[in-house]
Length: 116
Image 1 (cartoon, one colour):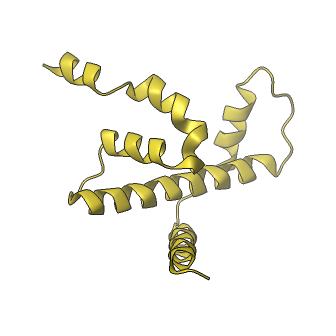
Image 2 (cartoon, rainbow, N blue to C red):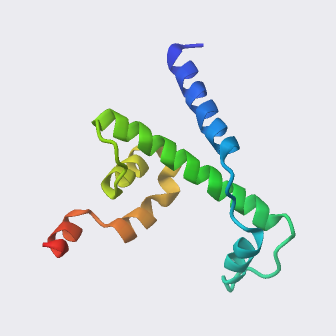
């Protein structure tokens, strides 16, 4: 194995480790309610809310881990919205969130003008 492969495996393990240490979880009842709020979704199997909740938790852990790495690279101690957007745009695994990112975060320049 190459050193790069070992580093990515180590990062995956760190992400998994932080996920395993997490003590808060999404309540299944709320996830089920959110799923059923969509007209296209009918009945929901009993295990579905738990699986969807875990998937969301794992996604959030991965996004936070990558954002922390990015903040360390840039020398800042805070994770901010532009940094989250940069992480989402730079990582293929977050491609499914790119459209949502554009919709709610915009290009950043318009938001700065609104604040002035």
